[in-house]
Image 1 (cartoon, helix red, strand yellow):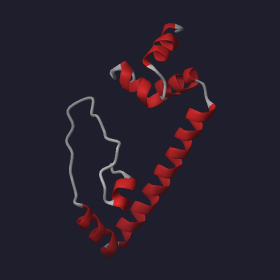
Image 2: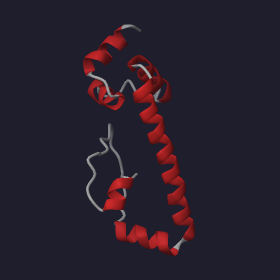
Image 3: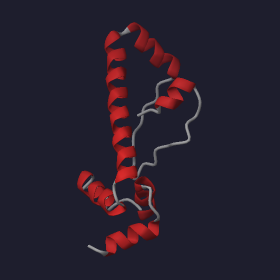
Image 4: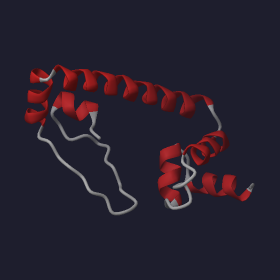
Length: 111
């Protein structure tokens, strides 16, 4: 997991990951990552493919926030993450969906 903007600009990004359970992480310094990209073509290819995937996900997210209702976004979230949506605090879900907690509560009360 990385931030493309942080990687390119070499600055801390405004976004972060908030783990909902114990997590084991590994860290690689950006200079070592650049070394891998420069010296191992398969790593550079992997990075390019990953960036393409990330770009596609960003486009889907922007389209969703712009052109779907809050209920549609919540329904899609529950369908996409069926094993975790009930374990995450409502505030996190609302933030991810780009809606207020009150709106999320109204949507959930309709079910």
